[in-house]
Image (tube, rainbow, N blue to C red; front, side, top):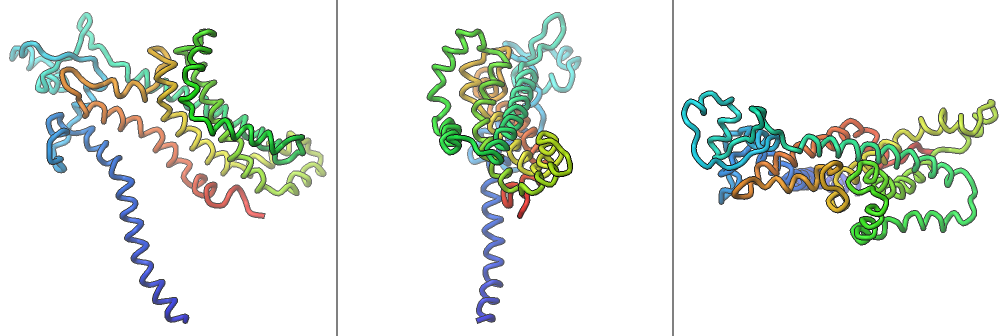
Length: 318
């Protein structure tokens, strides 16, 4: 039996590796396609069959960060030669940048990108912070109707957010909170809070109460034991919760589209609007999407160790 089991393991090991490699390639294919399209010429990006080998260029990123219109007539040779290299790329693509008093008009993408960082970052901090305190209370104290309260908190995630879009818009308009950073931060915090509470409660339950009891015996207050004993042990859970909350807030599209217009608009509803002049320029959309993926990828990479431990084992084992 041992020989049969050993042989089955030897056979299963390569199969598992092949399955993992195939699954990884499938998941990475859309990201690879976005990344390559961001560096393709516009004619190559829509070619049929798709072009896999091409000379990369940064023209899509130049278009992404500048305002431009189609050329009505080709520039003279003197104008073309005097233009910087990136503007010559636009001339070659039949476009020109818009200028005011000789200054190039930038696009709104950097501002929208910064708005996403502000809204997603602050809402994540608020949701994880309040969720941690709330989860600690549910985990350590006996609360009347605790199960009902937890279910009520969870029920806020059962309703698709888009269902309440119109009531939220009317309420925000009444209080003058449309197209404001504060409005989006409050909304994203509210929707992420239930997720943070439930996820953090699982981590809090994994931390033995004996640690706090020992700290209380040594003279610590309840608040001191929370900050000096519980929080360090819950670092893994906080990191994992922060990653998921940040991703949810970072990718949110519907409310950002409905409740914002210019001042507080985030990147998700702005990127599809960069369709180009004349025809849809998929390279510009891909460039904006590629840059939009980087903060989440970097944030997840930095917290990858905490994230893996948090998803698989929780905070600690008793």
